[in-house]
Length: 312
Ligand code: RRO
Image (spheres, protein in one colour):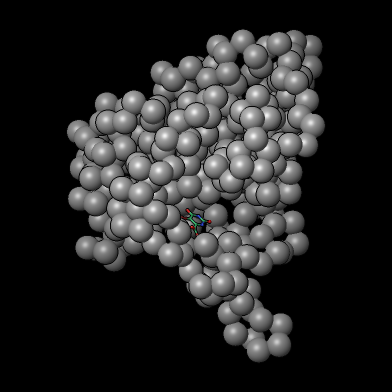
């Protein structure tokens, strides 16, 4: 594991709370951007001793196993990348049997991200994952089409509300709705999610993008299109976080190109209660802890910075 600076004493106190769950600080990972199981294999117990995040969000799982998209799955852009991974995962049963016991060994609360191809499927996932003691919170990844209606669940306020109403009775655990930036009005989607029982919203997922093969002009990515992330989208994410935070009372988890404590502080100043680090972790797997340390130093009295003020 690359050297990770020690958290400052204020970041170690463990007084931060998100949806009633006690965390040692406000820095999470973006779902799918840090493979904690592979990192444990690579770095051993050093990973657990200096875990980069204050809560861990799993890669999204689906009911059935999926292979994911054909390669290539990545394209580097100026200040970002486009991914077209296509949700490879072991499915619910495989996740519960194989991945959950390993993720339960992490030294921070576990958030499991789930995606359903319809409301009933989403409800089955929420019920089965929510009843596991190892799981502190669930994140609903609604950036996918509902096969019953053809609409992207998270792009439409009414679809999002119907999904929440269907899954809310399945668990008492906090439900975080991961919002897509590919929506006309993310603030309206967030407000609909809140009214239907969401405990928090997280944003942004990736922006839809495309790259062409330099010689053939055909789509480069096996999935044809993909999701753009990294510093290239930070200004867009910041605006959407501010817009959403002005529409809801529930905590907002902000992400999109965060690569420093200053960026994290900006998202908190825009109204986020917590932040997540995504693409930067591919460059530096210890980035989450560095950003948490930088953020804590900015938040010390007398320095310019943001003190979490919402959902804490
Ligand atoms: O697996 C993916 O390709 C993927 C997902 Br599920 C997601 O929510 N966001 C993204 O950029 N890629």
